[in-house]
Image (cartoon, rainbow, N blue to C red):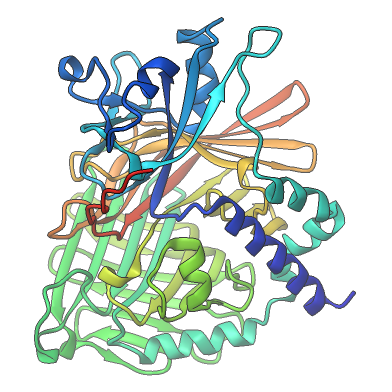
Length: 501
């Protein structure tokens, strides 16, 4: 079978799988355990109001991975339960993630009645013969997809970086340099320095979420943050008129202050960055060790697929996302208050664009980057992954079976924004190995936070110490490293129309 036919076959099956679960990235799939009699007593009402609500002021919900443990702990042996599946907008102001005393994780609390429009399905939730509970089975189409895709096909497809067209990605790079006024575009770099420090650097040609105005009023943003091994995080952001930004097919520039340049004549996509502000000065030279990689095999996600996968409005334009440098070495110098250093380290670089406004974007995402003991791992839980050990790329592509690539035990504890993710565990499998990434919430520090005027919208990155556990059978090896965790919520909350079942 040709590579093109193989990729088409896999994409069709993936799309069918996505359609079968019908979960937009913009929404949280949460559950509620309730006694059957209590639920049925209010079946004729447009919303459910628990008897204890007036005392606690919220309804305790649970994530998919918490269903079994909660049922075993609180409802052992009970046979009168219902499991209510809910689809709640991540932007719903009544949904709050709050830390429970004595726990390192945040749990979802809903500060309001459960409208029937939030309910997707109600399952009878009976214990099995041994007294233990089990989750309802996946939809038929999702179960069939896992059987239809042979392991060999999955393995080949999950390494589609091997047959991606890197020349196409370079052309996208040139276009992104030249398109300085698209609605949403970014140039993002992060660095893990050998002295234990971490740096995030981003340039956004158009200020996201800015108020509508004249074309001449458009603004650009440069932001940079340093998390030293010891000491406080340093953050710097400047907003400049878009008319001040100069660009060509190989560079972006804020004259006298910032230059991001693809080094002309280099065959391996080298970059250089010069930062020259009164507050911070630095020089970075970035030399790739791996070829560009895009989560979408062609570098673009077509508009219709965005609508299906992320809830973007119909007619939305395509989305470009390419990691021009999935792994590289970085050398340079940085001068920032008491931090004065010449350095070497490991770098990552991505760029993307979307000719649309945040209001039409729809959806949200979580992204992470881990580095430690020769491992380089990044991706979006439940979507795609780039897994590299040393010089070997083990996996680089979509994770087709979402339940094997999950984000659990989430923490929302940033003082900057209530919806900024500050910790969690990312689990996934590869062949006979099980991987678990965990950020230490006590070391997580906010590096970037761009809130909008709407309190539910945020784009930000935290950084901290992390561990990577690799298990084979009963044997587990745990390695120390560092991690960036990025979360973004675009959706503007709109009260759903209340209907009756």
